[in-house]
Image 1 (cartoon, rainbow, N blue to C red):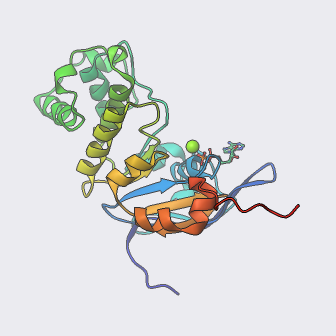
Image 2 (image 1 turned 120 degrees about the vertical axis):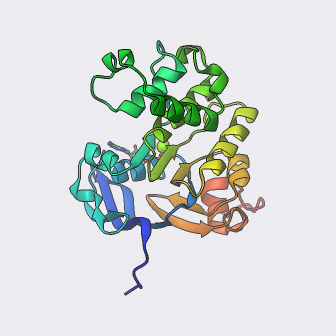
Length: 258
Ligand code: ADP
Ligand code: MG
């Protein structure tokens, strides 16, 4: 038996089948507190499903999923898991477009109840400070009074990360944050995530290898619902199996015998 370490997140031998299709197959994954981990893998590898399993959106068929010290996530629902301090950002941004950037962060600070009426309540000085601290982190301080709908795609993604940060999650799960971003926005997103390292444990799912290289943290490669390899960016990029399944660098043209 392995010596018990205190992982912020532990998945052991997790399986999930959809109509006979093994989306997740004996997935084992450990993460340390404060770690920034990058998960890559081809389309359909099971990356988003892994997040669905952690957040309780999907139930595993078998296996262990634990948060912190022995909290069994498989016994909890989505809401309870979120309340434990696990925040998730989906691929497409979902902000309240008719509300200002400031109000969007305020709404997430106040939680799901009475969402719209809560805007009209007085904002306490502590809340204001907290909101501006978040806006500073996501570089949107000067956009505080702008309608969220007027932001660029990249700015909306940062705002949504800010809305999660307002809840001060212990674990942050971010699914393809750089999708659809310009190179400059992608780079800024990398800087944002790096600035959060140590304050939160973060799983970032990403496709863009330039972005992964910018983060330059431990990389886990998923393939067919399981971990193909783990290591530094260089280690995974030089791994023959990864090159074949993910990076698409086919071997030098060696004609196959018919
Ligand atoms: P990735 O995020 O790595 O691209 P996904 O986790 O979205 O991959 O999907 C992995 C596989 O599981 C895909 O073949 C997908 O069609 C399937 N899948 C994911 N969620 C469901 C679901 N709720 N119902 C049926 N099939 C699903
Ligand atoms: Mg996905």
